[in-house]
Image 1 (spheres, one colour):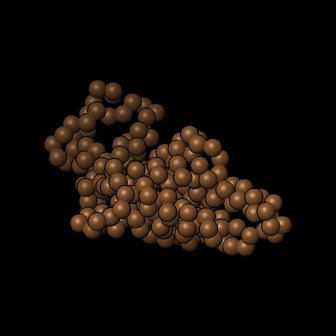
Image 2 (tube, rainbow, N blue to C red):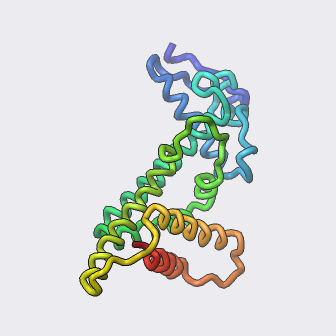
Length: 221
């Protein structure tokens, strides 16, 4: 059985997985979808037939692992955000806790987005379909946002301690969760505008990232 092969619609031949390796096909379908979406103009360009052709299997094989294209898109979204979040965690670990870690994460965010625009577009443009019962706090992008919020909270605690020592009163402002959303929106705007208007005389991206962080920190508790 290990030597038998599947014939794909594109005429490619693909060796079947060994017994007990059925999950490998799922990973291959996700990888094929990720590769196709990086060059696609829209999520709607992806089709089940196109994904299975790229993976070298018959379209029927798709339904062994996914009930719908939307379920595959969610798996793609999960995989992309897991890698993105890991990159931010690695950047944060290279700096001291609080504001240094926050700046390290934000600069890594910008670096990745500009270095791999197709991947970033994929990460931020996949919508899928909403389903009843989905918890927004359990969505694949939530851990990345929590990283930002955690770094902001640590930075705010240290800044608040300094201000209390100087004035005897705590500062007033927004909380880290809301500020994390504001910072994410700011970073996303810097990246997408830079890509859509390349002829504009943009200031250095590093300076804009730092100024965005400064602005958010100024309104944070």
